[in-house]
Image (tube, rainbow, N blue to C red; front, side, top):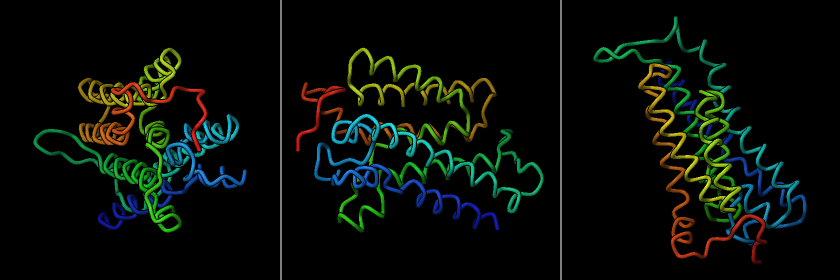
Length: 226
């Protein structure tokens, strides 16, 4: 039963995360987002290609995907986990619910970055970078991590006007927050694995990192080239 729960956690969360909110919003404006700008489905490319209102809608939708995935897995927990679901390994107290939340978060972010739906439609993995979806998942897991990530990322974006730079530094700050919260006993030791999701988000920005180093990265407010 526990194995089934974990499989459901990652598969269902992947399917939720893979919902192409950006593509659907752009399509409602008769725009094929895959053929504009970076071709990504996240709110940044939608902002450059479609406009502010559409980008805000996509941002909310992408955050909701991560939050709903984790909330759903937690709501299903009583059907599979008896008692408090805690166990010990070499003296460390761990939680089965943390494992399920981790799998749900990872599944949702992976789905957003590599959407099966878009693979079927476009023949390519035209996902986003996973930032908003990761924030939505962590908002349910531990809002403090989101506050730290946003507290670092947003000012960087405002000052530098590079969304990618703010997203990368925000992901790193959020990962550091997880490590500190675990160290101070505010999060389960298994929560350290959320750092892997943070690094995955950073790696998803590898092309942005290269453009930042080359000085060719587009700034916030610059329209996408068609």
